[in-house]
Image 1: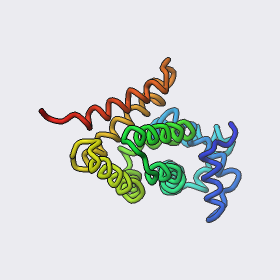
Image 2: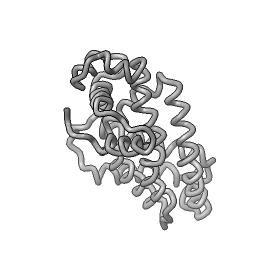
Image 3: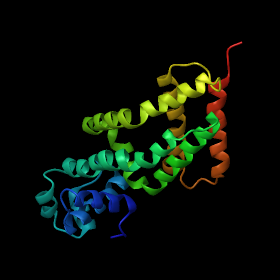
Length: 220
């Protein structure tokens, strides 16, 4: 079993505040993340997870009734406790800070999210694979994202629009265009082409300029 990853250390700390996980649960969760991340939920089996964790398969079912409950026990707390307060904790600093330009604001967001993705990619990969197929995860994400991120982002967008730095579009539309570009950039970097030979700083700059060009060009 590999050493405990930062996301799991944080999850264990948060669980200690509520219900402490047993040593076997820790091994099961860590093994499940590795296997779900490699094979996806549908392609994984509890027997594989048990073997990876070094426990009997029956031990998994003593803690988790089904494979889906095991998945939700990993991803749901990551959503509510990590991607919410833990992940957004650092992201909120970016969203709340004042920037003199939209360009600097975008750069801060991209760098911040890249570092988060780099640290927690195994869990994020599971989340990206499974959210289309599990209503519980999708609804939880929508609630968390709208509560902790959207209004702060809308406020910044309206500020830069009022200053004339970007064109007047509905804030939700502007946010959707920004998010789709940044998320596409992160998925390409960490999922589709993780070993590609590219200059990260240059690619970040290209992404920023692509967004800015779209948000600053006005109709003739």
